[in-house]
Length: 477
View 1 (cartoon, one colour):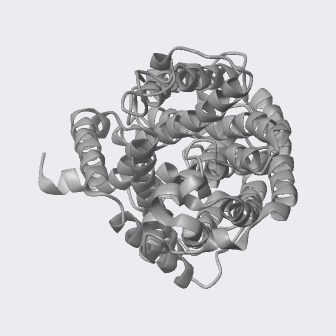
View 2 (cartoon, one colour):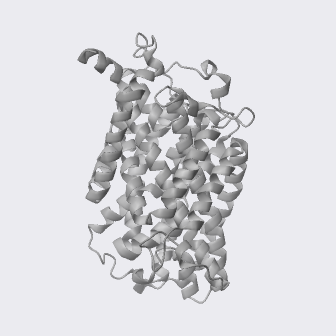
């Protein structure tokens, strides 16, 4: 094969005009999600470990009280990317999110890399959030004087005698089971659970504000002002749940109309709650005394409110489970979309004949997330998730600029304002946050991408659906 032919393969684009009716019946998804169910999935993916676990962990060891600024920095970068996602979602309501957006605008190799990237990152997000759930579960057990063997209480190196986090593994497997029941069941569960979670955060803010001691905000930058950028890079995964929600585009009753709104609504709701909750957390306790695993529960316990602490722990478990659910939903839909396009074996794209969900990849993802959650430290997994998602944001931000120039005539349900300023802001913030991550995270990420490159050239480029007589139209869509 000549260099020109190889280049043509790598840059061929998935046609925008492809319609769902062309998809075989055993590769179609069920459409049942409305606007508020989509918004609930988005909020469910954003609010969870970020408030209940990671805020305390980062405040304790990375930023101190200035964790609030870290969330705001991450929120600005996320908002810029969210508007880019919203334009794409109203134009390309297909499963796969950033993978599909990259495929239709930048070409197959770009779509492949971002899809391959998201397979690892979404599973890692599910794992880190499951570890957060496990921390609150252990807190509850301590409150009712139940002692379990140390070996099952956390991954090796996270505590004395720890070997594996059994509870985190069980949460991942339980989530896989729920996802396998069908998208209608997932939508109902998310709506109820997110309602409980938002009510819990409001309760935390209303009760906690009366126990704020302004002295706890001093020093505001105990680790230096520059630490807020490292903190932002670490908490970033907590503010992009809308990305995983957008992978469910084909399960929306009206994706073009509802997805852009759901993306914007979910991020706006989440950021307001994040700001209020971090103010309360760092005001109730000195940053050095905040628990890295069950911050709010221990904060309320420290001010003599153990009953509220237990309620928070129970609510946090319910709330954080929705994040695991959202990102496991996301990775299964990306995997499904890549398989349906022929970039991964089509065996993975088969859906359940009744429930119309990709049960095969759902259980593979469930076991993969369980292994990661049970055996790895939360900080390592959190850093790994963020570099991949930031890369996805860069791709989507570039892609929306490219498609606005190359296909300006395509109808857009939502049109990004201030083009190209907002995408450039998203790109700039994302690059800076990536640069703030430890070098070990870069090494892990690059190893994964090299493996992906081998898979693409050994399998994907020859099995792509665009390879079978589609090169003539690949760039026409």
